[in-house]
Image (cartoon, rainbow, N blue to C red; front, side, top):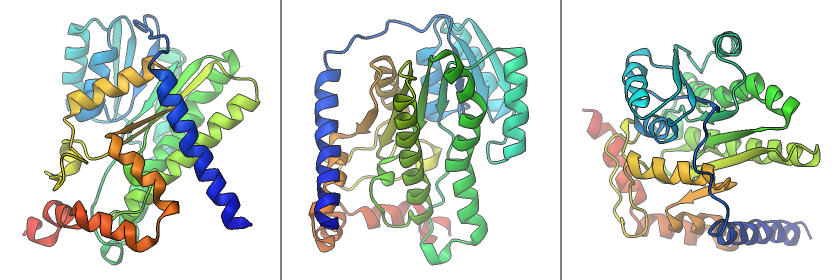
Length: 301
């Protein structure tokens, strides 16, 4: 009975994804977010910067983490029509610093209405090669940083029943993958947490707060260290500009999940398949080889 119940849960999950993505094609698109206060972590480069530039028109931007990179993001965002841009140095892996900077944002800027949690790291070591410090660092930056920013900014959204939570998870949050034990753990935790928060908001009558969970495959940023897909027709490595355009589109359409590329949906079918079939699929797309080339010891030497 337990297996049947679990199977039905996955069927429900997949059915919901298909229905939501079908109806999102006809959903009302918001033209702009004038007047919103948008906070983006990891905005100094890569996806974070590109999302900031695409959301800039008429909004107040709050940029977190890297000072130097965010100066350039700030300059470009103002060129793109941002109302105001504030840059804060914040080590998102440090809970006290996250709360301290959040208090400054509330006092100096106002209540954040769109929170985009994008900061993350990928170490790429095998499980037995990961030190305890490695694992803790991955969880602090990838997962707990999101816990702390949500704790800091969600209450104000709840009070006025208005806002949008956007969390960058990963396709690796849908299935455990080679050389990604710590990363997969952190991204799976994000998906579970955000689904739970969305459930609490819905059942608490706070439907004015939207949630978007981003689950991409590899993006060609510094995080990917030159990762190259062996089967780009199935699993392409997107550039940050394209990925950001998809993310902003998902935010404007208020999509709950953004899963890209489409082949990533196959990962949700893992419960139906014998484990050996999943491993054979990994072999077919040569994912272990790609990871070894990008993160293996030979690369470092």
